[in-house]
Image (tube, rainbow, N blue to C red):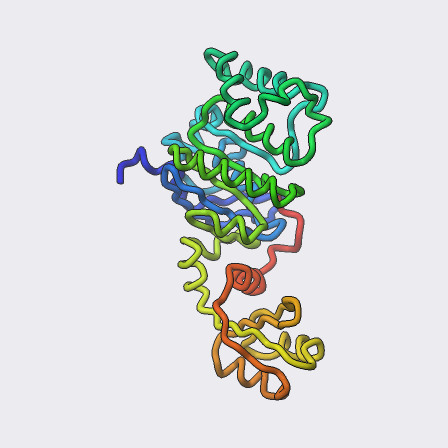
Length: 310
């Protein structure tokens, strides 16, 4: 693989605020045309990592490149080739869709600005609403406009920070269809999300908790690497069994799913010992899910002084 095919290649990224380490020795390598999912609880350091990658923050430690540019010395060049979509809608409510895109096209010095705006409006299905004020858009349409603004300067890399928060399932699915179309055309996407169904649509995943990168790989690799054994429990007394199972040695996660209880354990022996007092319950082995793995990883992670990191 040539260097041109590696879009992000960083090692040992570290960032602290007021003596508190919020990103701790993070390594990341992302290839061109891949959708890389970045997962973790609130306060895990996802946003801080994304800002270091796109040149908005300088790491305290670590080195590497983004789009072939040094993240420390060439941050300005990185910014011009990245589309960054933040968690909150950051466009101008008192401007129309078209006016918002025109503003960002001017900021980036986009050549043939009129043609690029028209093409972006068509590409994102916004042409019929081009004169509608941003303030009047629903969450899904605001999301689509924000993505259009990210694409107006034809970036090589999209950094999407929880882009579908507060958006209905239909709009989320349409958004992800667009992301896959972009990746198929050669664009690279790094996206942070809390939704497991979205994580499963990524080519690769990285899980960060309390500043530390705990797992990475494809969905299958991450699940296999956790080595969790899982069962589905049914029968009378599930509610009473749940807190006892959670407290048992070797039990990693216990979660109700409708009329069943989903239990993950480190070993068959640990599960059988925990279940022994509950002879009215029926246990059926079931494949571990991505959610099982991430909950288990989060429980194992050490809190870096509580919530609050970006």
